[in-house]
Image (cartoon, rainbow, N blue to C red; front, top):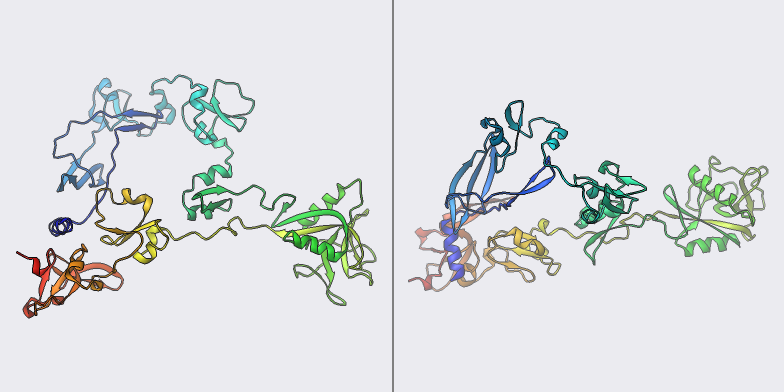
Length: 483
C-alpha cells in the first residue's frame, strides 16, 4: 500500500526536490558578532521548506516547497533599502536582514564603500577578552582573525592581548601555518592526497600530516635525495651491502648540493679520519660510472692529481687540502661510506583513494565497498552513507540498496508484482490475459524511453505497449488486482 501511494503521488505531483536551510542567527561581518533574528510574523501560506530560490536584480524569487503538501507557487521578497529611512534612529534599527549606517545626514548600507575602520567605529565596544575565552582557539589563524582581542603567544597557545607574551602574533597574516593545520582540514582522500605534505589514513578515515623529515631517522634530506654518512671501516662491497640493508645504495654524487653537503660533513669528523666510499666505480677500461648508472663527467667532483690510478676500480673521497676522489681496489678498506636513497613521495606508499560515492554510476559499483555507499534506485544516485539524510532530507529516495542490487532496468523484472514495486516501472499486460507481459520504464501516462544512449531524459512512447493491439498498461496495480 505504501508503494502504491508513492506511485500515485508521483503520478500527480512534480518530481523536483531542493533543500533550503534557514537559521535564526545572523553574522554582522563589520562587528564580528552574531545576533539573534526576531521571529517574523508571516502568513501561514509563506511557511515552507524544501523550496528553491534565486536572487535576480536584488529580489529573491522563491518557488514551491513543502508545507504538509507540495506547493506550486512563487513568492517574491524585496529587501528594504536603507535610503528609505529618513531618520537616524530608524536607520540604525533597520532590520531584520538589513544593516544601515547614518552618515552625512542620510541612511546608507554598511556595504556601500565605507572602510572597515569606519564600520567598526559604529560597532558597540567590546570588553577585552580573557585568557579563558581565547584558550578555545587551537591555532594561530583562528586566534587572531577576529576582533576578540586575542594573541597567539610563543607559537603555542592563544591568550588575551592584555597578557604578557615573549613572542606574539596579533595579525593572522603573520601566522606560520603548519602542515598539521592544513591536513586536518582536508576531509576526503582525494583532497588529502593532492597535498604533498599530507597522507590519508584509510583506517582512521582522516588526513594526517607527514613527518617533516621525509628521509627517516639518521638521514639528511638534500635536494631530491636522502644522504647518510657512516664512519665504519669497510670494503666497497660491504659498504654497498650496508647501504642496501638501509634500502639505499652507495651515493651517486651528481649534484653540487650533494657534494657540498658531504664535504662539509666529513670536515666535522675531527677525532677520526673519514675518507668514505662513494658510488663510483670503473665499468670498463676507460669508463667510470655512478651506481645509479649516470656517467661520471668530472664536473661536480674532481679527481685528485695523479688519479685515477690503474690499480683502483672503486672510488672514495680523500679529505686533503683540496678534497677530491681517489681510486682504490674494491677489496681495500676505506674509512667510511656515503649512502643514498630517494626521497619517498609523500603519498607513494599510500593506498589509492577509492572512487567517491557520488561518481559511481551503477548499483553494483556503488555497493562494492560494503556499507560506505548507498544506491538509490528511484533517483539512480550513489551517495555516501554518512550523507544520506542531507542528500534526501524528506524521503526523495523511495528505496535503496547497500549490498544486493535489484535489476537496474525494469526489463529485468519478470512479474507484475516485482515490476510495480519499482517506482519508475510499469507493466504491459499481454492481450492473452494469462499473466504474461513485460516490465517497462514509465509513468502513469504510459511507457517511456530514453532519448538517446548518452541522454537520461525520458519521453513518452505508447508504441511500446500499444492499446490498439489490446495491450494494457498498468502502473498502480497489477491487472488481476484492479477493482
